[in-house]
Image (cartoon, rainbow, N blue to C red; front, side, top):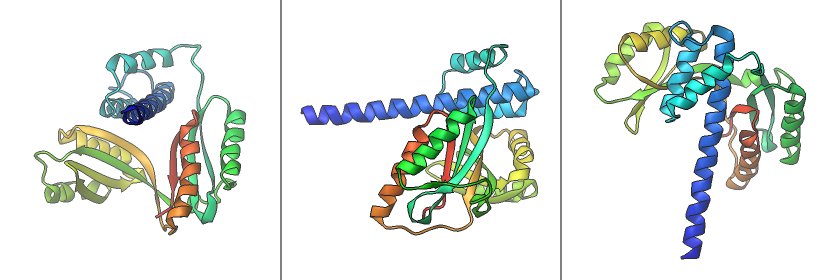
Length: 235
């Protein structure tokens, strides 16, 4: 009975830790969006997008409002967005997107993570060409016709659309992110999540044992407070 309780407790703490990390990431995205375009989501599409994502993560509205208020304060730190590139063991390419108020600290930590898990931090452009930047959207599939949506959205940069577990996902071109957002909003579609992602152009096959070593590095990176997103080309 004790083992079952400990296992459940561990899962609960892991879930809370993951939620806390997601809320911290959203908080930084709000700060960056407000600094760039102001605190009014009606005139700041980036902030509106972040607020949609916060709602999709069930982030309490009072926390979102508080984050916007903090972002307007003169004492609020400025976050710099930096992308690092490198390799995990066995030739798997990794891209790490960060938001930091101390780039010196961040690069030291990112380098440490790579070194401790037998990876190597590369220079700018060393693996970026292996990924394609795309917009990714998620919304409810209820009452939606996939074929009709595909025809309607192809003029707004649609690359791929599919349904999975009651949701519709779609990829659009990086440069079409804004127009796709507006196209979905104009059709009354409530976006659960939208983001700019990186899709690998080729993948590296690894064994189960190799995957565990690579995952150890990915986990370290994702747990870092300055890291917003981690992408890789492991199959």
